[in-house]
Length: 77
Image 1: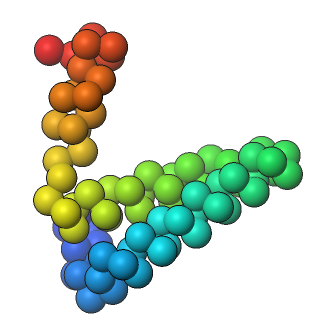
Image 2: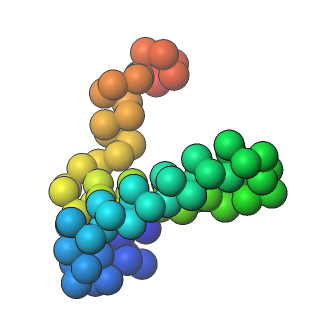
């Protein structure tokens, strides 16, 4: 993810990237609430991609963060 989008993310900046993330969360919510099942998968992918972009911009290792927070629940070492 980082390699694919790091230059665009940096040019856009953190604030604008957060705005895109919030917009995508709204689109996901609309898809769910309106029963548009066919678009939910796409919107979930968009939200995850934008979360990864924000994490990358902030230097957060998403896998390490998930393991730290949920490792025991996920059966992770």
